[in-house]
Length: 303
Image (cartoon, rainbow, N blue to C red; front, side, top):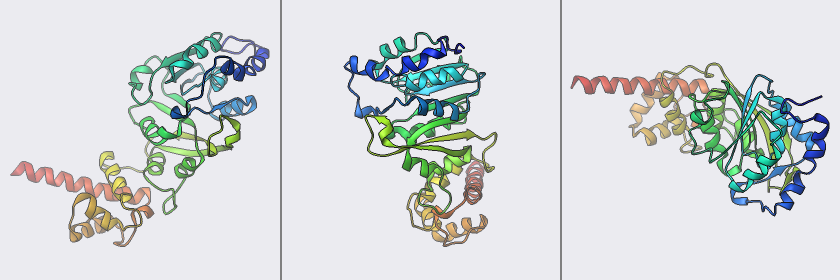
């Protein structure tokens, strides 16, 4: 049997078993500053690739391929894989290791600075994102990938276990916050498996989780203005353990009577905490904000 990437399936185990040796022989030192923690367990890597639910017709953007351990498995499932790697030292290793995979493309650059729409313009749309995300950019990267302008169908992400718990949190729970709201608004989230720190080289200080975020066809709740919705979300968690009434006053510089009126129009009790609000309740308050902004614009135009 031949893999779609072009190399015989029977040789894959032998090739991949040499990954650690390739790194060792290159004298490459792992960069903690880049969050480099690599996986080498072949059974685990294949399980992760399968969990991403990639079909032969889909293209994949892999963020942080490292030494290519997961990349080879992704190529065996996908139509095409575009891997984005920041560390220039890894480029020659990746190019040599993936030379036999005809459906592989490598791009060196910082995913947080690249024009992702331009970088992915030749890929089939929508595409899948797979990533072993460095912990220090987890939240900003997920927020960037959730941009409605980016045609992503789902994201298969290795993240810190604590972050996974936040993503899966609901109203009133400790992890419920801006990241959880944003993920639930745009996606259906599922934790596929936990991955102990010992599975990585070098091992991180904490365990990880592999999560799947399936992009919704439409956001979970309708809102008049997404900008105002996320302004309200920011206000809700600006001062944790405070009431939403106090957060409205502090964020939008409202007097208490005006804030109470906003709460009443949204059908909310005055003493409810921001961290207790559901998506629907946040959306209702966002629509009040939108209507107030629209009324202010009309008044300004009349004057």
